[in-house]
Structure formats: structure tokens, C-alpha cells
Image (cartoon, rainbow, N blue to C red; front, side, top):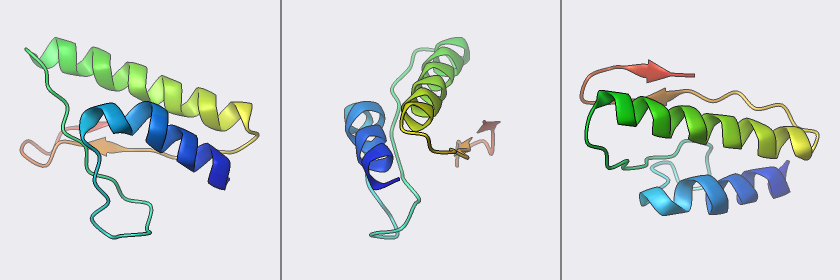
Length: 76
């Protein structure tokens, strides 16, 4: 599990200025730059797919929800 989490942090989150608001916990804050809502959907769908692939390849189960704090919109 640790290897999957570290790989997801390195591969999926690092390019989006990741921070961890609760230190060693499992919550992350990322800032995704985008031009419009459609592009944001594509970026987050791709990121979630990549996260699930990494977890699956390491025989882990991943539950992930992305929330836009400004709008309350959710991707999962």
C-alpha cells in the first residue's frame, strides 16, 4: 500500500503542486490549471484513471474523490 501511495503522489500529484493539509494523513490538496470546465473534467478523469491503474497494478484498492472547494463539484 505504501508503494502505491508514494507512486500516486509522485506520478499523479506532484505535477499539480500537491500539499498534504493533515501531514501524514491521506488527504491531499492539488491545484489544477485549466482553461475551461471540459478541460478540467478531462484532466481529472485521466488523473483518477491513472491513480486506479497504479493501485490495481500493486494489488491495492483505491477509493478517491476529488472535490473543488470553490464550487463543491465532485469527481470520483
